[in-house]
Image 1 (tube, one colour):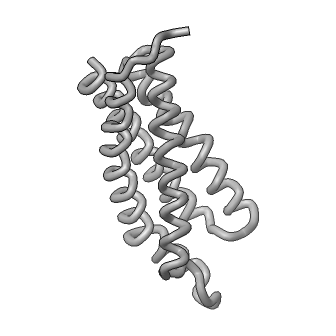
Image 2: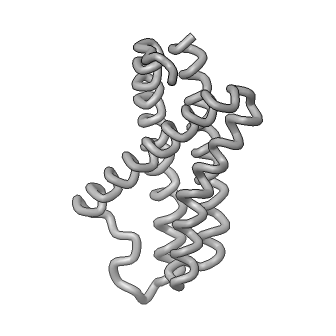
Length: 146
């Protein structure tokens, strides 16, 4: 068992804060610019597809928080265990992405709630978000934890 390192704890929280800005900006941009219009085009006769309201934003806040903690926490632990190489960083981001977004979009597609074109756009963009988030985590570990 390793001793508690207050510098690493502080570094994690700083990194989490920076990743929160990135992930929220990326999620909002991706949704409004691509996913929402594509979903509305795919289901033109269905009312209420991809709505925007206070309850939807509240749920989105929960989603972003869970995703933020999962990506940053998993990547941090992965890099502590396997090293902070670029390869390990991208692998950690990819694994977190697969565990969250591939499962999400596979389920949505499987239930007939998203056409393949939406999935084909959403998944690569979400991977880019995860990769940048993992790189931010790597940078934060190196910059703030020493």
